[in-house]
Image (cartoon, rainbow, N blue to C red; front, side, top):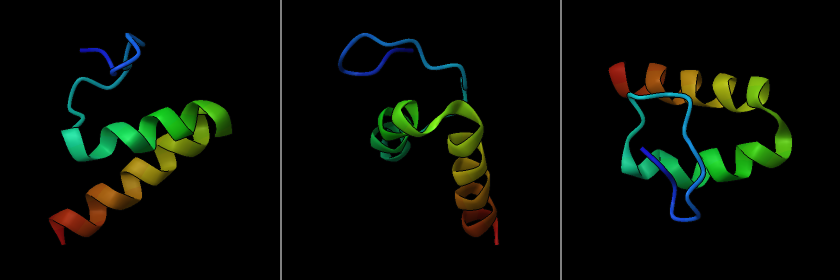
Length: 46
């Protein structure tokens, strides 16, 4: 799976709503974006 700019996404279970977050994450760093996605996933799952 790739973003609109053709960048490979390391996480296969990403949703379309998380794509913008991942693009921003490239500027912050992979570790930070993984933390943000984990928090988002925790909120969604309750």
